[in-house]
Length: 125
Image 1 (tube, rainbow, N blue to C red):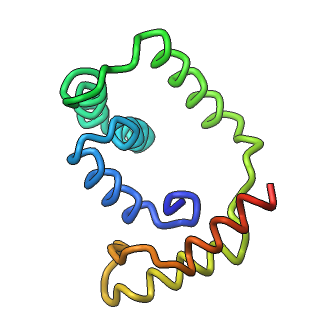
Image 2: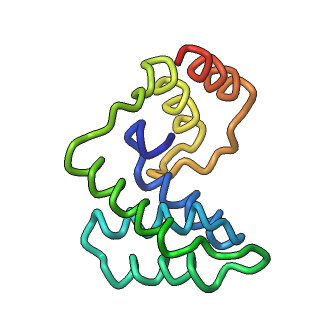
């Protein structure tokens, strides 16, 4: 959500926090992020974390990861048909950003108001 609403530094911060706590999904997001900005060494690091270093869960199989990579390349090249965030959702993210003065990274915890906006967005699909 942070990435989609124009807060890439904040998205990266939260992905790193979650990946450090063992989230394979966050590690994959970091892998894709670093690929997009041309940082292939860091992308390989997060891919390795995804496939080898996360404890307590089995890594995804190679065919699944290959499919995700193909999908990610397609979306990057052609865009996606996914719903874009609404103006109301973007304003909620900006409201969270305002709670973190003098910082380019949103570290404020989400609150009930954001949860309500996400529910509205999901119901409108």
